[in-house]
Image (cartoon, rainbow, N blue to C red):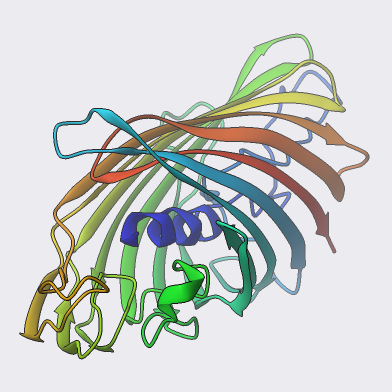
Length: 325
């Protein structure tokens, strides 16, 4: 279950956040490309001094299967999740910005539904490199992020089948390097690529009873979540100034989560299992953008797993509106 929360968190942490950063264009043309995406990647440029980027998100996810330890798909009861997010980014000078992300989950399984606040994210971005005309150097924005455990992660009700879970319970610190380049192809067509490399270190957390790492009646102890590495390669290609195709390829790997303490008993009276083995998942996210103006755009797409290990087999439908001011 941990990887499901990681997917949701990374989706928000490395989401569109289309800041309408200053674009490089063909010096012989007055055409200026407009981009909103991609769906998952984080931009390589800060939003700019005294500018604010507003972006609400809606994810509808169906966890309809599970990849076992050997990467084979297994059938499990389907879990449906609505994830509502609001991302706000503010620029402070031309080299620094800050972003917050608040989210709420509505989770349903086996006739049970619960609504909970998710974990809260705060991200700082620092401009390290800027793309220049005639140079191979890309944009590079270095991020330092902290996730605060505001979602519910333990003392879960076993009769709700985990639908009342919405967080990891851990303070998670991330360091990321976000590269980006805009390439002129021909006439009014442009290609923008991004590469995100992020490493996350979570803090140990105390768990009591049923929790997102397992557990049962009488469980009491400490979970040591594994560190996580995430990489995204994304690109966008504009058909014209309004319509753009976007695509993300995302790979995530998490070390195992260890448990120390009293494991307790499950609902059948057997010793409860607490902890999660190492996990990895490869996912794709094609999307289509429509840009009404340089400041306003909408993006919609589908995000789905194609390979995994000890993680959910999922599909997620994503819609977001971006407004830059």
